[in-house]
Length: 450
Image (cartoon, rainbow, N blue to C red; front, top):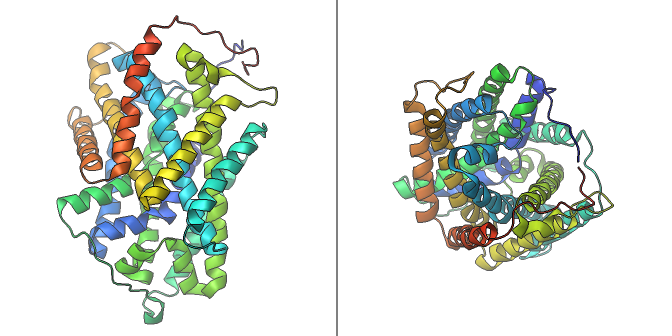
């Protein structure tokens, strides 16, 4: 067993690059269409994206207190364990395996499928076929034991910024030219509470990922200060980027055109530079999405491997092959992701169904993590807190209220995907009871990387 432990080697710039690179991904190239489909005007759409940034900033301040008070590579898993105990930790780990990570893989697969179908069309089911092939192919590569290059995250971050810059710059060249506007007439949901709730589900999912900063809190130099600065600076930068790119989307395509597009960045670049521009951005986005999928598959399988080591019920996931891969964890994860692709295909709302599937579970654990700020202050009043969330208890209370509203919205205003996600999460309860009856301390595999 290894005796190493995380060391504070990441600079402030490294932390910002990781956070921005994690958040600014495939979502901004696809989910704005769903936001535009839920709201009825450019002003409301841009207001939703601004609200998403403000809400994310409030949540980041809460996470900054937790991350600086309890720095740990376990991130939210560690916070939830400290606040609510091992049982909550088990349910969270189960949710990451069965809903959060696998749902994210399937969501990314559908985005990849949409853009791949723009490059090489395969008919009405082409996007679904490409999505399934992406899951199978990338899972297979990881099973073979291919290691991530150290520069993957930096390249992904660079490709994303290049793509956004191209869309913004290209779109600005054609704003106001009537021949470039695409005005298909489709009904919008209006500006009522249901429409706003649906829009914010898509907006905040696009902002999602900043909470992953908690997993690097033990590895940031001068983390007591730099974690706060990194979170705040990252979210401000992301908000500005999202507002700029959505402004271009709306001005080039109109709200109706954005809502009707299945590859909005492709359509903007096609309007600016013709088919060559559309193909260029489609290829760039496809490469970026596949890289995101690969990272998600890579990290998700290792989370599942850890679940197998911590809980004997899932001990079969703790096998580590001679090729350097958690094969059973990868295969189970790939099977669940493929089942979710099938679910999305059957519902004929692939990406929307995956958003529905993810959202209730996502917001439930966000709410529990927000509440843990209160729980841990009461339970550990003497603990040193290098950063305290401003305006306590109002700020964390506001964040928890937003999380509760988003949890309500994600159950009330969504479809079959949400029911499936809640049902899969509930399946963790009998598994927890079964796990508690098993002897603790499953022996790790002889092929463990530790």
